[in-house]
Image (cartoon, rainbow, N blue to C red; front, side):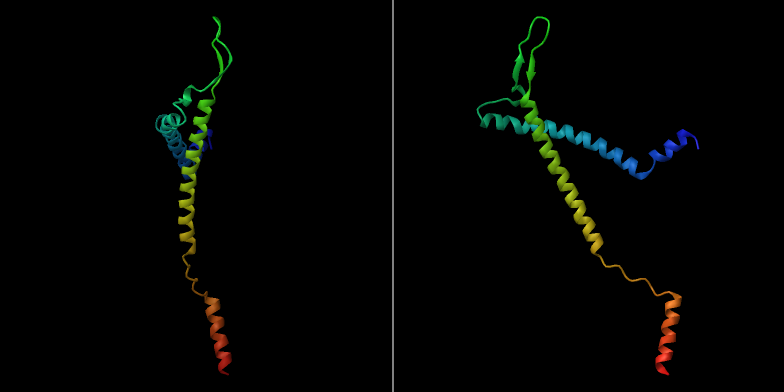
Length: 133
């Protein structure tokens, strides 16, 4: 089997395609959450704590010179990233929790026992005949 055929077989398996779709949707979801945090959540929080814009919060380690830009520690963006992470982690938790509850419902349905095999049926008949004698 050629390498291209082997790769095609690997790539077309259901799990790989599902994983790729999940990664793409997850990336888009991450961008939505980042925008939500930066544009919707952080501005009101900044107003509540005194009109602070979190994206501008930084500590200057080295001032700018004519040859180089300033070196800053942007802790405001880091705080936004933490809030992004918390929201994404909570959303994933909710999805996994709902999937687990669906799996539990499927597992709790009792399965009917399989019909007895021919040997079991024959042995049961022999036992019943022996009991009658």
